[in-house]
Length: 208
Image 1 (cartoon, rainbow, N blue to C red):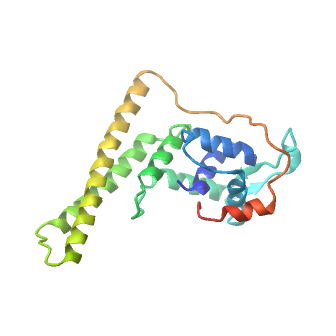
Image 2 (cartoon, one colour):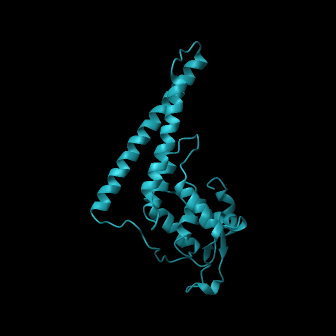
């Protein structure tokens, strides 16, 4: 999952400092993300550069931590990420899972709509792959390899569609039990100051 979009989604709930964002991101995605504070701050720097977040005066925080606030552009970016289907040609199942895990913790996010939109995209892609497969009789090793990769993509999409059906079932049962999955922002103790520049450099930009 894009750390950038995850941070924006969390900041849509309210202003946060870096350590708070780190813990919120990890806890809201089932503790499966391996993200360090250097990645958080380097990503926040790029988000600020792109006009998606802004720093608030230090006095805005009770404990003197640097708070970050989302801008209208950042809010629109987070909304688009939540609602648009994932169309990356790579295997995005893990990214989709963490996005949905985060989405169910956010108030006013229509997770059923996200599932429906993703299903429509998957069905469209599956139909295209099925058409490509029809009538193909490989004549050389390269064509055999192409068929195998096509089949792998078809099986992955079929599995994802079954998984989306399962998610809808879970959401329906959760709603029937009256369980509210939305989480408020939590207070997290933070270390003083920001990490050193050397930590930021080690993280790179691969998670944007």
